[in-house]
Amino acid sequence: MPVETRIDTEKNLVIHTVIKGFGLADIEPAWRAMLADPDFKSGMNVLWDFRQGVHTDQFSNADMQKIMSMTVEHIRQRGAQYKLALLASRELYFGLSRMFEAYGDDIPIDIHAFRSLDEALDWLTQ
Image (cartoon, rainbow, N blue to C red; front, side, top):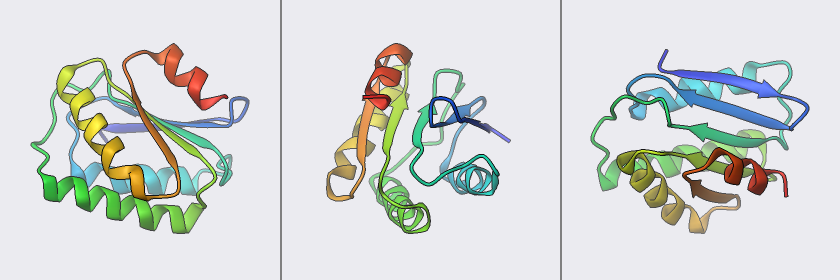
């Protein structure tokens, strides 16, 4: 699986780490893995870490809208009391993360893209 999901109960954090190529079809299995984990609690913040990703599918505007629709459905399943940080050091992933952040203005969670792990963790724990 191109996404590894880990729960850090001490930090109240879910970490999805992209370890291979990443595409639209990889999102839902990562969410299901999180929801199925016995350590998961609905108020946990989420970090998507794209720093190890080697390439990505081409994401269209329609794909971003689809991901946003999936996120809205996911919020219905787990609640909206959390933050979502997107961590990307490569330009492509960071650009896609910023695009997703912009699409997220209309949903009830805070989304922010970061280039630095320390900055992402600081924001998630504020």
